[in-house]
Image (tube, rainbow, N blue to C red; front, side, top):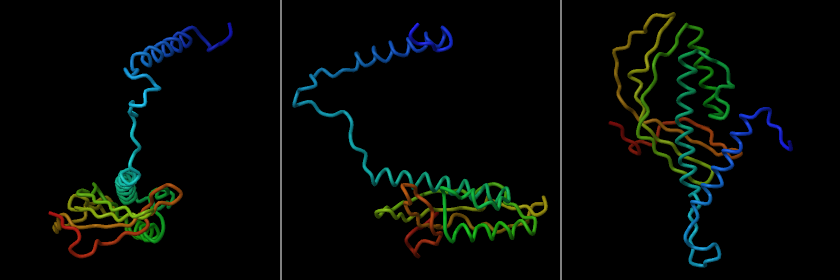
Length: 183
């Protein structure tokens, strides 16, 4: 035997996969010959700006997942922000988490994030969104912290920078007045 895959079942699966691949490639050929100058390519080049916008929107999701987990669990390890955020925000967030831990405070639930807008300019991105923390409450020493104030959805903003091909939140700030409205 030339190839040994450790058993007849693996060999059968490999043969079946090969036959399937060959039969699918034979069935999916175009009617035009490969050397036909009128043939058009079936794939298009992805728009780099659209790809960056999608990557930054994914970053927003990962950023809020990380912030919520850090505040809900009281995690003060800076490694949790690796690949998500860097700079002053991380230092500030860790200081807040340490204060929360000192007084026995944990957040409960999560904010509602909506209406995410991303503007890309080279390796920089401006992020604007609406954040509603009304359902993101807190507990101190296991007891709910009373809070009757409901503020609803409010503008939130951040800057992101592409570093070595990875988008990172590098600053958190309020969007300029009037540039983002939230219902």
